[in-house]
Length: 303
Ligand SMILES: Nc1nc2c(ncn2[C@@H]2O[C@H](COP(=O)(O)OP(=O)(O)O)[C@@H](O)[C@H]2O)c(=O)[nH]1
Ligand SMILES: [Mg+2]
Image (cartoon, rainbow, N blue to C red; front, side, top):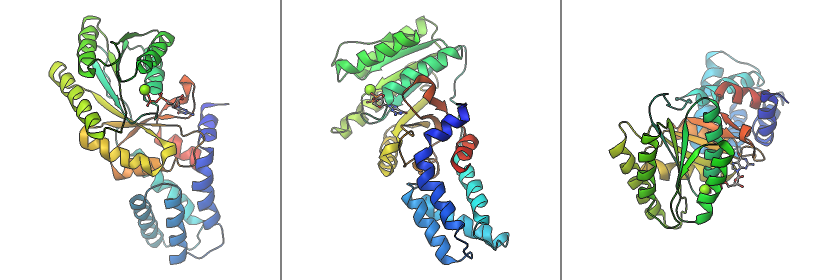
């Protein structure tokens, strides 16, 4: 299977509830009227695009239909594809990494969304792109978390800085920054805890980590990546709000798009919070973490 087919395959369920539903509506040989737009609105909301985004999308469709004097419902299909692509394209999708300097990438998100796994995959991808990569295990809450990251570090062949379970995450990050500087590391990927039972504590901890980086690294952290699990649908949007308030998130890694019908949430993330999606996860293997390419994503969805 080619890269594009794999993406299409990964997005299969989302395509079913999103595009196939829209196709059904617009090919029902209908005139373009209010009822049609209402049906489209409902389909978008059900496909997890988010209420605001769905309303805005349909408003744009109405406007375009009027401007271009569209007559037949099926003509809306292409307009929708264009508008979806427009939303997905917004923002900077490439990581802000430069060779020859230390780029600090802080990775945040609640438990189980795929932070550690994504960091592991990313370490291998970035190493293959020629960066000198190091990992920092700042999820010190469970010993298993650092062990999981260590396995990835061995697999990718990159250094890792870790301390004992229960040690201060800020101290781990400080340690890692010193090691990264002395070893001419180019990308330091920092894994963090995500237990939400203690919401304020978690956010305070992340703010503290951020301050440690800011004090030590000019312009750092270069990226703060929020990992969201696509399968959680609208819940992912509320998580985005929460983390945006605490740390300046620069972009999103959207995991577990494979096997979920809720991939439409990517529209809400891009539109409601102006957060560019930078990587997507469409499976368990390293190559299943992909740079997010808006046009390819849209094409895979609509083809
Ligand atoms: N199917 C699938 N599973 C994923 C993806 N990303 C992560 N996972 C799985 O999600 C589970 C939790 O991941 P983990 O990295 O430990 O989450 P963390 O608690 O945020 O660090 C693991 O079993 C991963 O293999 C993905 O894109 N697709
Ligand atoms: Mg983890």
